[in-house]
Image (cartoon, rainbow, N blue to C red; front, side, top):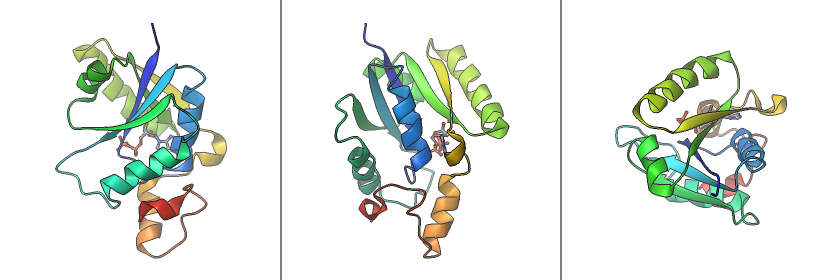
Length: 152
Ligand code: ADP
C-alpha cells in the first residue's frame, strides 16, 4: 500500500520552512499532498490561486507532490485522498504543545496519526504571520520565501 501523507496548512505564504518539511516528508512517504485549508471565517493576505501556483512552483520536478484545497475537517479530507498520516512541522515547544492537542483530537475522532517533523534550525524562526507583516510594510520577503514574485 502506498504511504500517503497530507501536509495541511494555510500557507499564507508557503515559506522555506514549509518547503523543508515537504522535502523531509518525501524521505518517509511515497506521496505528499499539500492541503491548503480554506476557512471561510479567516482572512488571507495572498490570493488562494496565487498561493497554489506558488506552492506548485517548488515541486515542478516532483510528481509525487501535489497541491489540493479543502474545506472540511482535516481527518475527513485525509479519508477522501487515502492519506494515512497528517504531517506537521515543529519549530519549538510552543508548536509542540499546540500540535499535540490537535493530534490527540484527530486520533480521537479518526484513525489518522500525525507525524511531526522538526524544522531545520536555519528555518526555525520563519513564521508566515511575520512574513505577512514584512510584506505589508513593503519589506523584502525573499530570504524567507522562494519564488515570492509568484504570490502577486
Ligand atoms: P496553520 O494555519 O495550519 O498553522 P501554517 O501554514 O502556519 O498553517 O503551517 C502549516 C504547518 O507548517 C504547521 O505544521 C506549522 O507548524 C508548520 N510550519 C510553519 N512554519 C514553519 C517553519 N518555519 N518551518 C517548519 N514548519 C513550519
